[in-house]
Image (cartoon, rainbow, N blue to C red):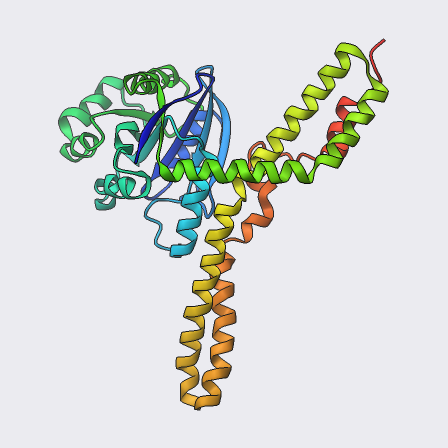
Length: 347
């Protein structure tokens, strides 16, 4: 059952969704005010989370692969859908559905159906359409184009309750940041000030918490050693300050890793591998049948191995967690943190 829950007033969680093309990545650049994605990127293979500020408000922006990406396997699509939910727990305050103002496709018109299928039928209440434009048209002309001139844009927006915002493809144009933030905050307030959640978002949160607990337990000895070292270097308030800073940074790292890799995602990986093995074995056996019974066995084994590899290849990125979580700097608390925070005590 889909629910609305009270969310934090300090950070606005935004899930940016795109049907095809670069619009959702241009939107992320616009929200963050920096080129997180190059202008040439039209799709990504794995979900990503970036943090920053929008008109002074802290935001977390989650991007997944394009919602109509036909080049991704079903197992990979399922994996990245789950991962995007893990990156946005306990749930997004808003779904921002990005389109190119000049290139509305049939897929774009039907995106709302896939949104309901993937995130739950009530998610459209938390959606806003974001239209990318390029050029120097005045705001009034752009609004008129959407609401009066182009019927296909009007039809598209009506599927999301009429909520829309127009943004420039130039991420350095910050002139409409305040307006976008006000629209988002108004939408969230109209829904009771909460964030969107559903059974799968709750499931994602449960698995992330469980993984956090596992990782924290695994690092218990390391944390205790660090605390012992602090006790030798600091006293009183300075000791508490150093402990708090260290604990906070360890918590951030553990949370980031748990969002990117946890039991729920590993279950999806195992299923992808299993499906690949079965399909590969069947295809291999069919090819091998030409060679007779012995060929069926041989090619079935080979096909199963190749299929299993194919089913799991999309998940290799799990091994590169640090490269896909923002901030991109790797956190090695045995070196970077110790060197930074364990400087000689101030006199």
